[in-house]
Image 1 (tube, rainbow, N blue to C red):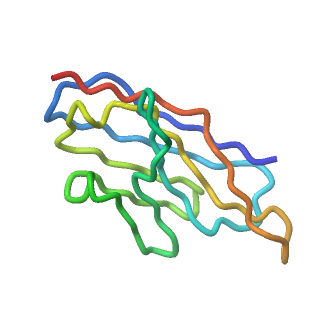
Image 2: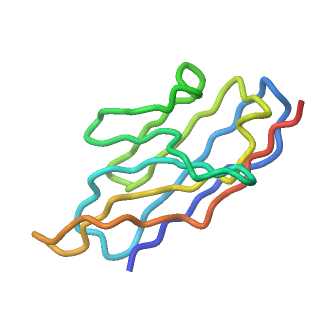
Length: 120
């Protein structure tokens, strides 16, 4: 089994910053990619940013404001969020594509979600 534990959400004023962390643990043989998704009330879950082998990918709405980074030794991914806007308010979910057995497929695992609220 694989567990993803998130931390760092909270309430912040517009223009402020937050840093999210997500640590993966359990029966991990290899991690192909880690990332962050978010879901606002009444909206679909959307990709915020992901990182794989040092390459990063961002949603257009967060480019220049958010930075994703990872620590492979710790199976941990971070999301530094600056210049936060009320539109960033959502539950943020950590995602990891994990291989638990060699030569088997990678599967998606999800964290429990952490609330980020940006007040205007």
